[in-house]
Length: 354
Image 1 (tube, one colour):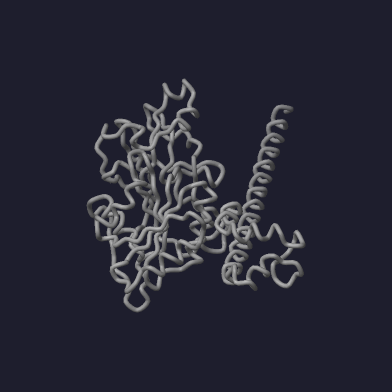
Image 2 (cartoon, rainbow, N blue to C red; image 1 turned 60 degrees about the horizontal axis):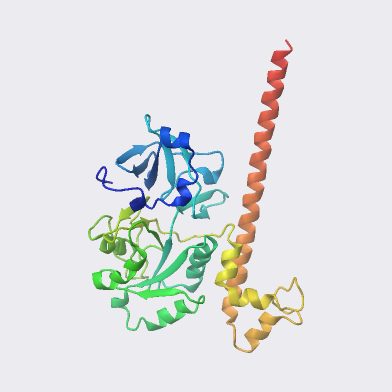
């Protein structure tokens, strides 16, 4: 990554009063605020006012205290070693793929989330709902961007399906290679604003990045003809400077996005169902065969799609399971730390009595 030194002021990098209020006078004298523009395996690319460098990764005691792209950090003014991560305005995370329960941080301090899908076989309502729940949980504006409109016979049904996912949702149809189409996204990309792109591989995220940035900053690859699936082209998370003055985060494709601590976001995306559920006869209604179920009544009357109920229940169950697993893991970690402190204290006491 190449960034001209002294090219940006802190506000241009997305600095807000909320970050300044976290700093003490002493910290202002001895440290520099920098933003993480890229995360590599062994380093972080950071930039501040008149400053850029590659520094070691930052790891805290808790899983969410690791530095991720978009973070604001304090580094020592002389040695440039990381000191701490500033409290985030927002944080996207997921449970990492596999059997473990480790939380994987995706991006921090995002203002707008572009949820990218394409007008072909990749379009998947359930996947879009997952991303929307993540955005609303973080109180971030989601914008659904439907790409490959030039390859679809009629993109209108795709737009209608996306708009029906939640009230007031912004949906844009674009040909990612057409600058005039992509220009409609610039309203969310002004100076100091940060946007992130999520979506499965092959939907055109890389092409959008290049068009918005006015160059070929990242590699792109075509889709496979047999199933319209894309190949992964992004191997690490990083931010790109936009011509309009904002910053664009590019993240690897995530086919197995899972929900953790996003119950409120799910309820907002499925507000029609969550509101109906409040009027069911029984508080613990499972919305299946119980008498007085307002949700099943709405389905019978054609006001609610049965598939939407199925997706809501699936996401809610997944979120509850992952959140419980995370809470259990945190409790075990705290218990282990307490045990270590007790052993250390006991050893010190024995030494002092000798």
